[in-house]
Image 1: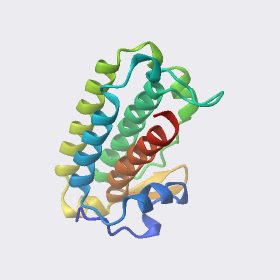
Image 2 (image 1 turned 120 degrees about the vertical axis):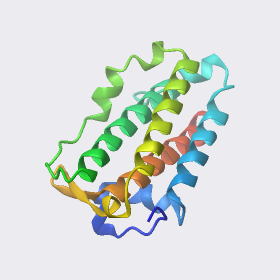
Image 3 (image 1 turned 90 degrees about the vertical axis):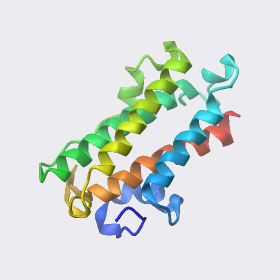
Length: 171
């Protein structure tokens, strides 16, 4: 049940590009591989690259890493709620506000990468705990239905998207 075979009715249209960018993948493979890819890309960058903005108003690499961590926590929490048959319509979150209030640029990059690794490993364990039936359960986020399965792939696709931006715009 963890191979990408998701119907478009399992997630909000906003997430379509994250899902489509993954192609056909196995959930745990893409979660592990993307973790390694992010760590290998960022851990040896010069300090000045970590707080560089390629354009006014864009996030730095440190802020992007913090954003990926925050978004993964939110998405995993949603998956947990829906896997427990809690179909409460959950609110969205303002990612710009979260980044503004994250203090990401003042954090040590090693600590950010450690935190990302811990969060990702916790997400992997959470999704491994789900039964096949739990993956098909869904709930609402801002009025749009979302399946537990889709949330796992959105976590991976979101991180893959931002890592692609880092490689294209920052390095």
